[in-house]
Length: 130
Image (tube, rainbow, N blue to C red):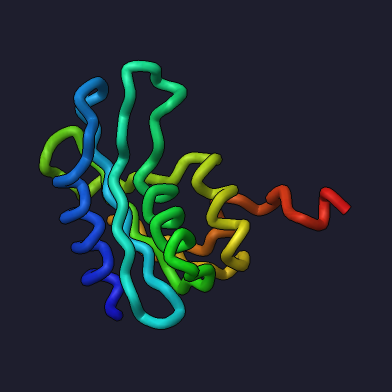
């Protein structure tokens, strides 16, 4: 899968966004190790703390179908139709990704490809619980 193609899936996912409060649409496209793509969008709620991000929506969709190995995620976000400015995953999404993905997991934004560790060099893991 070419990174531009995965990013296009993320942009397409923004069309499903339920963002009636902020007007900021976010889409994510998660590539599994098996080559399958799960998309997600942000879903807002009048009680803002109940809002869920596109990245977590995609991860939870995949995990709910038994898939826990991922290769890359593309994220696109905009309050207009200009997706050229990078939309960086929030800390909660990065932490969820770190549960399933290694530090070299690829995060694709409009301006390039990054590693998960570029955004979250330290994460909380099961090792912290033991």
